[in-house]
Image (cartoon, rainbow, N blue to C red; front, side, top):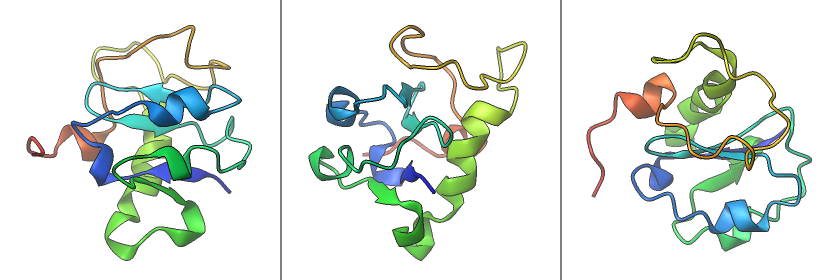
Length: 113
């Protein structure tokens, strides 16, 4: 099980969750943040600090946000535009910095207000 970041984060990327995460498993894409499903230890520290309430435990995802579970995983498993290979499990977001790509669902969304 893992935590998932949904649509309320798109084009916001507050990063309070990144600062709170004890295992550095929240990666920054171009328009959203993504929690690595294999690196997350399910501590839940990120959820209460999110100012836009975008983070959910996967079993608690509202129906309208369930597509973000697969999209979140795709950020790490698929070869995204401009990359030569999937991101995989780099073992921490801090050493990578922000990536200017997004998973397919997020990349296809119109700009959020």
